[in-house]
Image 1 (cartoon, rainbow, N blue to C red):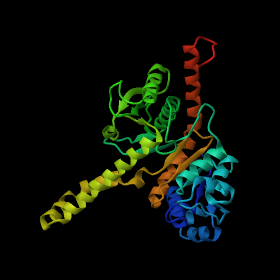
Image 2 (tube, helix red, strand yellow; image 1 turned 120 degrees about the horizontal axis):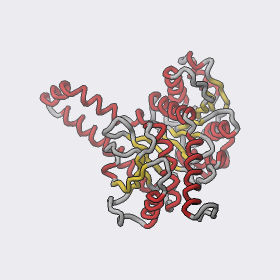
Image 3 (cartoon, rainbow, N blue to C red; image 1 turned 180 degrees about the horizontal axis):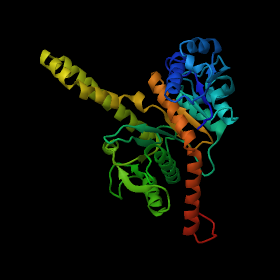
Length: 352
């Protein structure tokens, strides 16, 4: 299948052009149908392409020298949106010059620019940032929102659940992904009024392409018995950082333990296959590529510190969402929710 090309903000991220171009080249070696619009300083991009002959006939360069700073406020970045590599990558999606955009730059600026240029889909009030996280099972778990919206009402959470489930059907292949709301307990009486209202709406909406299974506590997110965790951006970002920090804490403890004595070093050599498997499973580069769901276009956020393999994974996420028509899936699910509301209010009646 021929895919639309992917616009890559080549200037974003901690290491910029070198890693972004290397990641795109690695993605193309894995999937030779990928094509790119590389946005950034032309001289630097051309220099980076010298090391990747497989990209010569698969990429076009859009010259731009201006870059969004890592600590720049979104309001400041918006004023220069159409002059920056990040903004021009998003504009390429808006005008149909690319099917998706990938950037490792400033998250807040990327969200602001994407929302302004692409607008939210009909039926979606706010876009959400969704990411894949490892679990004990074979499939990852999708969690949203992870920071785009610090405060959310019940309607937002229901929309996040629908978008997350559409994404999960692509990633896991399940017809009705299991969805839970992040809460401080699993009892129906726990949580804020917004959480309880969202839970009730999801229980009542039985025709949706998802299986709502109530609440989940933060310590169960990575067990692997659910596909989607829904929360507001404030709680989601805290939970994500806590999980990532715990993973680094455990791996650092293991390193220190294995270095503590000769006996420990021998033990490390014996257990190395298992520790390498653990390291691979917890490596954030292997799960890289957060998605802004709910926009009229595909925008993927790569972690700023991602290496070439991480960038390649982010590119692969963008390509898969294009191939599997994510936006069309969400539109169909929102239409189904509208039909459910109509039935609840009487045939032909106005949905409340």
